[in-house]
Length: 109
Image (tube, rainbow, N blue to C red):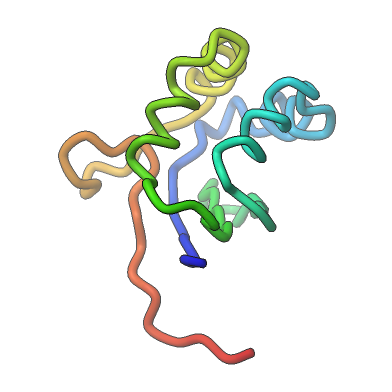
């Protein structure tokens, strides 16, 4: 299992819409998240900075393949088409990232 954490900006005028969308995530999107070996997935909102923080556990063996599978899913693409206009990627993210990955510096079970 690999713990993952990512950060992303949220457009101030889209906070309400983003929260509303995530109050009722489509079942097909949730099923795809699970099919791609993601467990214990949470997204947090930090105000007033409008930052989204996500954390999840990856239980698979090929993260890149699972993320490609998710990205190819038509229902997930529809979902992202609604969510992405709300989001504002950080200018410091790595090439190819939307959500900026974060390094774990501490963990305690």
